Length: 204
Length: 323
Image 1 (cartoon, rainbow over the protein chains, first blue to last red):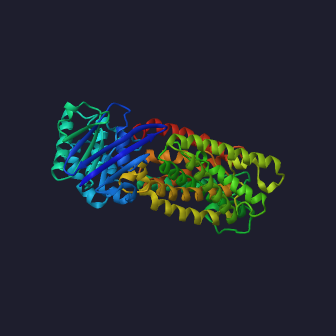
Image 2: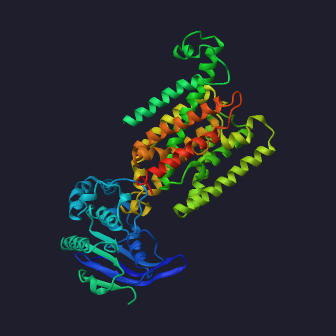
């Protein structure tokens, strides 16, 4: 059974139909990248799978259940989401932001995740002082402390240096090997996505 | 915690000093202040303990209410520009009380007036919020809603001839001159209850700083949290507006100054912002009474004159507190 399944999905942003008739089935234990140029609707696709925006047409299901029928808290248990372009205006520490609103299990996983993502040097700093790449890793950490079956990541490598990139990639591959389903949105070319199991081009 | 005690200590000192200030010349003023039960029936005792003391207490309570209201307004909208005056909350409260007074349902300073103000405040805030599709729109639409409601208050007052409807300056700048002990009996319990409720909702308001989508992604309902905060905010603003009118700027400045002192965590912030709001309002009110006696200066002008420079200084100095 596909963990994430999209059938004939259409999404409208503003008045524009950004996704029209998209179908895909993502199996458990795989990493899939969705690629495409700017404005092709790939981030909208992720938002729709995360349940943030309504569908104009079609159906999305997670673990075999239509997302419009899964409650907010059940969705949150099932999938974790990493958004891009995070801006902070309040000086909470990195640790505080990662722990915010999380259950106890997730909070206990924090130290390990901070370590793996090489964030110990700035873990007690204010999030307002972080660079783009560091802020992005805070977002990745917020998702990774959660024990989900599905991880949805919007451009997780965009602002990372090569060392951080390979670190994030190896974590995602480890999760895949544990049977998790991972979906990555990227605008990079297919060659640099050799670490993914499948690459779907929205233009194709 | 040390800095909080310092703020409270400053508040106590300022309150004592404020007891000695005023248009009336009281002989042996400090003797009456340090001996609250001395010579109870003398005019001096009455001036200090029955006229000045309630007013000082009201300044502290109203300042605290507005300090907490500001924390909730900024936190729940995740927007550093939000304050009750911008969201339409204050103007909504004014319209609420004014409607109640002109329809002969309530009198200013009564529990009924607070209820009318709360309804007006909550409706206006929800109206602003339901129209806004983004953080920026919340502010722009809020300014619009405020402008409409403030204009309605002004127009109604220009047409109404009743003295008990108060003046335009009461509704736009506020005044503590008409405070009675009964005002305190309404302010205090509402401040305590709303303060406690604000403390309860504070960690959830912290969460809103992640943005609504991220809040949703980890299984919480941002709108529910916001609605709770709005209800508390509306009640706090309502009780201040219905007892002393709209006091400008305090609810915007106090949370920023407090954030500079103790950081962004809303639970701590509530206490500090309340103390700072109380301190600024008490200082402003004392100045308004003492600078040109027997004339009183409009309190809202002094809160702006005092709060704004402190706000600008803290924001300039506190570079990484928020940007």
